[in-house]
Amino acid sequence: MKFWVVVAAAAAAVVAAGWVWSLGIANPEISSNAATYGGDGPVHMGFQITSDSSTTIEITEGFGVPSGLRLLGYTTGPFDIDAPPDSFRSDIFPRRLEAGDMVELTAFYEVDDCSRLPLGDDGVEVTVAIADGPFSRFEHRRQVSNDIFVSYGPGRGSWPATIAQFVCDADSGSIDE
Image 1 (cartoon, one colour):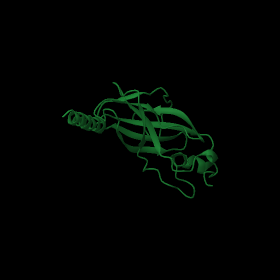
Image 2: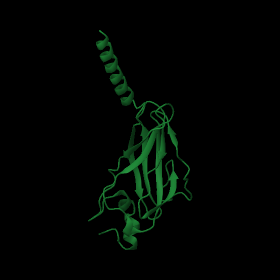
Image 3: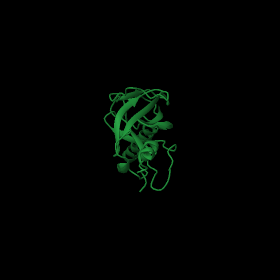
C-alpha cells in the first residue's frame, strides 16, 4: 500500500511540474514578429515581442552585438523609418511584460567593419526570465522570429550582414566572401 502511495505522489508531482512548465510559470515564453530592419546608418533591427507566459516576465538582455557592428542603443516603440531617433537608450533592461503584453524593441547599430560581419545563420535571441518568485533567478535565451531576413547573395544570410547590406554595398560591397 505504501509503495502505491509513493508512486501516486511521484506521478502527481510530474504532472504538476509539466502543468507549471506549460503555463510559462517556470519557463518564460515569448512570441515575436519582425517589425523593421536595415537603414543607411545607423542600421536597425526591430521586433514586436509578446509575453506568452501566464505570469510577468522580464526581457533581461537584448539582441547582442556581433563583430562588425557597434550597439548604439534601443528604442521601445514605433519610430519613423525615414527619420530615426536622434538618441537611443542603453538602460532599458530589464523590461517587464505582463502576460499578453507586447513591446516593440528596436536595436540601432553603427556598422564598424563590413568585412568582420558574421556570415553564418546565427539567429536573433533575447534573454528572458520570470519576473518574480522562485523561478526568477533562471534566465533563458529565446530565439525571435527572423524570417524577415533574407540572403542577398553568396555568403550572406546572417542578420548582421542583412541589416548592414545597404551601408556595406554603398561602401564597397565587402560583405561578399
